[in-house]
Length: 147
Image 1 (tube, one colour):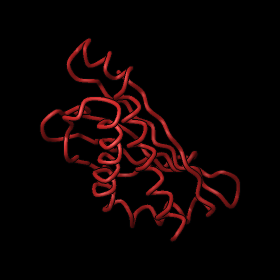
Image 2 (cartoon, rainbow, N blue to C red):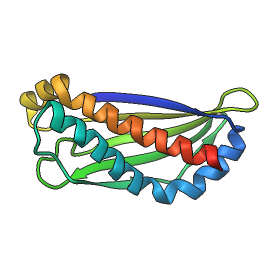
Image 3 (cartoon, rainbow, N blue to C red):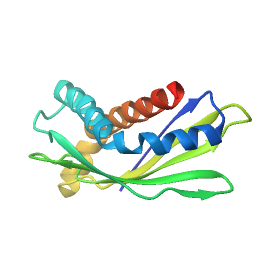
Image 4 (cartoon, rainbow, N blue to C red):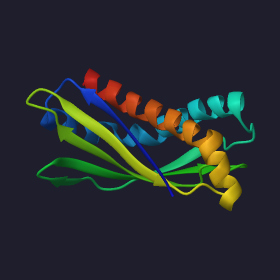
């Protein structure tokens, strides 16, 4: 099991960001696909070129707690290659003081192909996942910052 985490900040109060996030949840699938392709471009430069061409994203119901809001996500690469067959993650939205918010992506995935997949993951594929997740979070942060 591989763990991946990335965060971004939005210069807006957490309640405003939480309300805005509800509006962008429908775009997460498109953004995840775009972000995966960004990671795919990296993989073609440094590793195997046969990777998936699209992703399927399921967005669960947000939950609210004293620390903020949590949105479950299941992100699965489709097509030939299936370098990242499934990532299970949470988007966590928390206040960062009175006027800012931190959005954190916390996910795990199981590299495919057993030991060979784990070696590839350590060599190249985890970096591809990092680039994909960074791009994904940066897109969400940019949309939330715009309002």
